[in-house]
Image 1: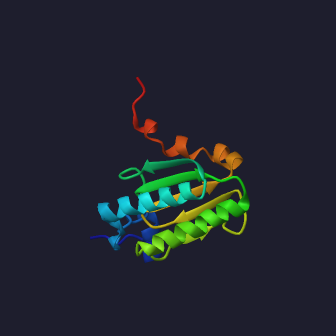
Image 2 (image 1 turned 90 degrees about the vertical axis):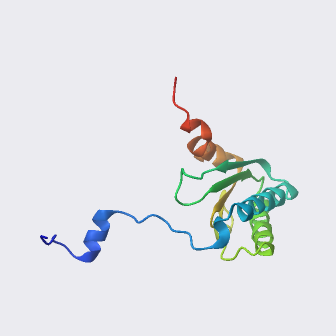
Length: 142
């Protein structure tokens, strides 16, 4: 077999990314449903507006579900993120990552198989994640 030129790293880059393999128990449908219910319930308790849950299974490699919600102020959005982390910890979900919680128009809460986006109304309209990931994109145009 002929040798292909390049270092192992260059060969790996050319080959592309490896599929994501989930090694946690988060992939179980039962836990996924409980996580989503806890997330939506927590957001509703915190008076989030327009809470939307999208099923990304088979459509995205980074998560199986996406939850999007709107908050009115930075403090409300930060509190929603904090409460989500607490609720997920009660379910046994560890290593929940957040981005933007220091006061911004958009806070991302990454709980592994569920990603939560907390927006101010203007940022939510600008990024339009529901349009990007919504189920209507899977339907063929007729």
